[in-house]
Length: 469
Image (cartoon, rainbow, N blue to C red; front, side, top):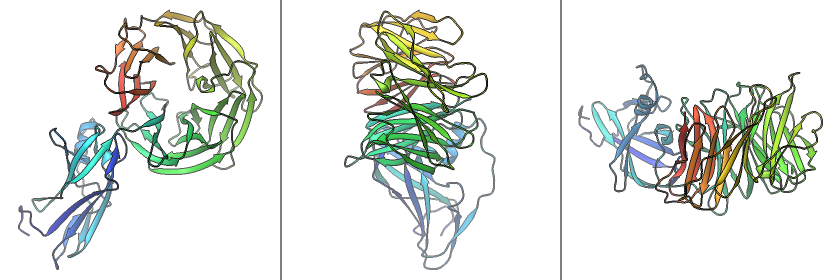
């Protein structure tokens, strides 16, 4: 081996777990170093140390780009990492070392769908050794369900997605944002499902929980998994919470590892209590008013003056907005009409965890392209506003969504391809995806460090856009 000159002494190989990857999701790979000398050893970086490789991506018809752990840290951290000693490992003649890694952890932005040639390089004794390039195909996920959760400080975003997999299966994936930046992070696979009918993710009800609960329904039952990092810590299967029941998202997780999830069905609500030490417990609350679309219900957790947990549930019924308060250890208050509007309610949201008093409720009533917004806060007069006219070029039908929180925000999916958003203080609707070329779905709004819109684009994958400070 001549210093500074690569030769056949060291061989670098790159392989991916699969030749096809999902945009925005994990990208597991293995780099292998082989010492081709029959005798004589080499000293290389240890597989237990930080990833020492640089990766070159060559997309079709676009310039190549390089990624590594160091470039990721330099681009995403306020200060460069401090230099430190690296752990070394021997590589005897004729032997190999494998370095399992996830390349998604080095990407500042998800790979766009397309075909790439990818290679790895490794520096040794002043020379750079490069692997043969391998082909990687990246596809947009075919999203079936998408749910979001905001945690207490407003800088952390959790997301769960179910995408259509191969051979009729469905994959449940989970994502946590990184470094206080909602756009950083990637989805990890958690479960393989068959025919899921709903999805939910927990939010941190106390500002102290690191693990996340995921929930889903399929085959007449509900499943739950408590996850953290790359691990699934616990999982539970729960008997059917009711015919045609759908989990409402988000649920709520607590410091002791427990969680609460609420399922809605035409017959009423079922509260599911999960505990890492005991079996799940179910409590039902029959409904007696207007629960014709269970998936349209929303729920927020608060504490009464005695510090006891209560859950405020609200759901639209034509021009009426109905609510009930659930006691996890008692009964539910009779459903009552919160407000009646001149137009049907088309979207409703509620604070997932109230900071003080009862959760804030935001709701939109609309007919055609005219919409009205109402904010309901316990102990205060309702606040109402007329929304700006929906742009004339917006396609039909209009699918509305609203986000309750410190600021007021509304979004619309118009037709199959257009997305518009509005927030308090704005004079008009903002077009989020012009030019609109691909089908979009699963439009969501979430309060983080500002208001963010999240949706699935059939050609690009999951998209995130901040729409208000």
